[in-house]
Length: 243
Length: 313
Image (cartoon, rainbow over all chains, first blue to last red; front, side, top):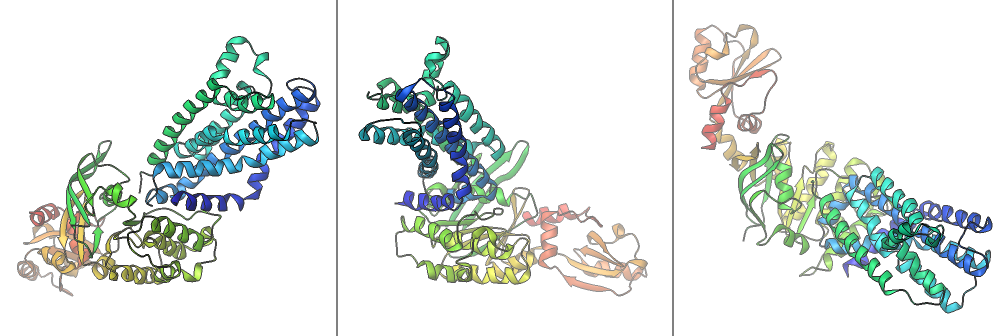
């Protein structure tokens, strides 16, 4: 399976850059601990702790996948994307492989914030819910991982960083990862509900509260995932054009 | 079935026609040089053969199918003109990845990674980080990546540009080893002596068209001229001399490219301009300059167009 070889190679490169992996968890972890202890988060008690925990873990995961878009953009001037294009690898395999690597990079911030939530802030969930929350925080990042990958193929490193930062900060705020969208004006909350970031958080908030993920949320995420995949594949094909 | 079959292909960028209604067929198992000045369209042609760009008009077939299909079947290996190696991996990991990607679609047995690294002459670099190599070493690794899948067609875009003589020789040893296994090799180059020495066939490209195509000897022969050179201090106006199509000044000497050396020499003698006279046949370099209209800043090339047009016909 060619995809495995490619993922293995890119993971090797990722793991040999531990500074990058550490950077991705510093800001969500700090923000999580500061926000919750100044009581700026979603509420009080265990519920509030779980709400902020999911929000900040998701925030960290988005930061990690957007940063991996920047490293893709940095590979472009080296001719690496073109080199891949000249191998017997389908564009979709490369895009999926790179998105999987970005998802691996999202694991440290998710793990760090959830550990802090459980150990420091006393978020208490049953073992089954813990597992489901962490799993959905990780799987649910897939559409945004593909978006980050797409930025990497379509944009220069500098622009990929700007675009990534816009999603990281802007969509996290709009999507309700920093504070609940219930506190937003209702028109803004409506906008928020069509963003992939809000629906991504919703997956784990639902499960933490003992509910199943909503059908509407899953459909919104699936629609974005499709659009981002098309974008990323186009970007990949375009970025390899020049010899 | 040809290795490459290009028919009536054109490709433009804005107002520039990089490749203009070009036809090219490469038989399998030969080593072919694509020779031309900067901007002649070599890289654009190569990018279409590799399926990285689509032609505006015409068709490109590689090994009997579309370029994309040949690439996806692992039958094409390429070394683009520019590009550096990625960081975070060793040479062995990088070459191994490319080999495994090919092995997954290979139709026959593949050479082992060790064997492959030996043929590409990168065994000594196996444990080195790929982004920490010298220019010559990196180029050898890039070549190893191009041939890692034991491809039927190897496309090398200026493989030896910016390499020192030792590295060039080393790389050519590796390329020849692959050609001997039966692969078709298409390479572009600026180095005339390289085309002369390494290629079975030379295709000269200029302004998006093929202006000459044949063995090195055939191409030299197609330039009808001789070069008459004399001491510059005694030379009258070269424009009035019979047979002279172009001339250039090189230090104290003037080189006259002529289609009728006898008449030129007689006229020089009549004008009393014979000092250190020398008559030589066309070198591949002269053929190349004449065929591609390459501007020589010190010379006048009023007549080259007619010569080149004659040759094309």
